[in-house]
Image (cartoon, rainbow, N blue to C red; front, side):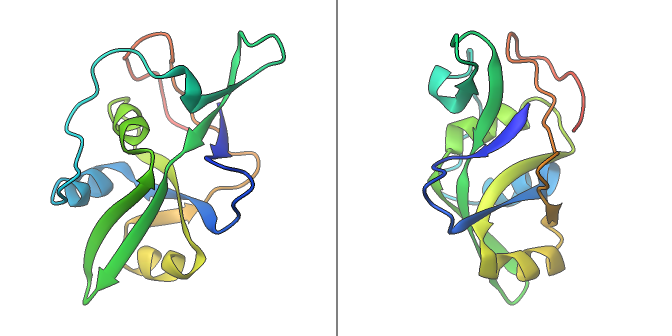
Length: 135
């Protein structure tokens, strides 16, 4: 599944891959942590083919990473529930959008593993809640 920025008119968030386990552990320390997603994903999280039947891409969350003295805090502009849903698929990495100036510190802190490239895909089974693979 293709990785889509939440709002393609906004280019201030750069798509990156983050370590899913570390991201979840750090996010769990935040007030707005979403511990579980029950049910199917929301229709609006995806982009579709012209017929509106086949899911072509998932819109990633816009996230702010604050890194002070090696302590990482996570704040969402949007996409908390979508991110929780992706984390429940058991992927080793998940895509999110961050500000450009957060990339180098995020890599240094070990939370960002790499940039999303145009050919990167997320392999998600959107018909059920079972993990089906990695990128």
